[in-house]
Length: 463
Image (tube, one colour):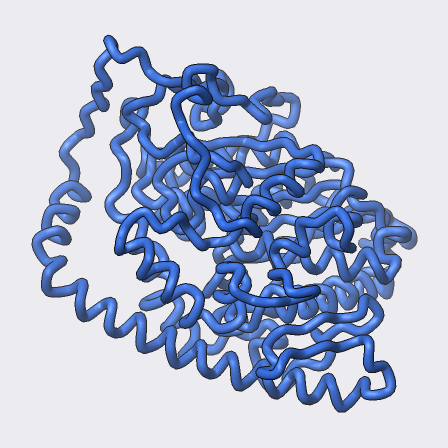
């Protein structure tokens, strides 16, 4: 029974690249079980699968439209959305940050108080990595070209506003995105220290230096209540040898060796299929985006300052009063949150495994083996809190490690993002693919170690 005028805290969750709402099903369930009718969760489905190629801005505007419609629907039920929080996983964190800028400029946060903003494994500094070897150079080249506008924006290869890339604009305190981000009472950043080659520590935590590049060189202490949350870290005493704990011999051990033996045969085939699908969907995205921009331009010709496009029609600026989410191609079933069978097959069978592939194999464990086969839900204890936020690197580590060779725009992002106060949490998850495990994206990534980060977030988020 709905009580008229019942106040609701809206929690908005957004998945990552090639993703769908099922990837955040676990964390959504934990939020609902912990806070019940105190919150209303919106696990967004308007940017699923191939639509994530279309750009952080276009996806962000679709998110804006969905949030507005959700608030309207709740109000029709007699509820009052007095608070709101946002959670973004991977690319979803960037999309959420963009949406916050648009919503803020429209006055949304004057009516709905912004409480929590959280990202898990989000590439805030982009995915362009320092070119330390040939493999990285190939990755950098491919990510710009195959992933349509999203790839260009995450690689900082676009010219979004004033000749600067979108991610740099979004980090600048002079623009609407950080202006309204500052209105959130609590801002949480969760970054994987190891085993995440999709979104390494330095970009997830927007740091100049990758302090977790060599785990055997580190001496790490963990939070007493959350045993994957880093409490302190410094260089290991050179006189103390790093000895990784032994792992038990299981069926997974056998499967792992079989996969290694089959890699010379399977890997070329898998790469060919994945690249073909990415190239096809990337091209389709560019055609789709061009159509959206043409439609938008025809509708707002009387407001020439609202929409700016470059010669190829690939870079856009959106007025906060006009959302491209409402101009997007409504004939696409996914725009309405419907994940069709073909796209689901491609995502789950080809593209998501391709993203996971860069995380195989993983680092050695840092702790004794845990019960990774357990599927029990996290027991929520709201009273338990953690103080392991913004843990600084040890003195010896700072003196020894040098900053990464980042692009000038990436350096600007790190500088500007850190002007705002954040609560950063570094996780060391016992998983070969921490990028998937950090949100328990699928059942196969579920483990006692993976659930700790979610549990920490559930217990520290403010209602």
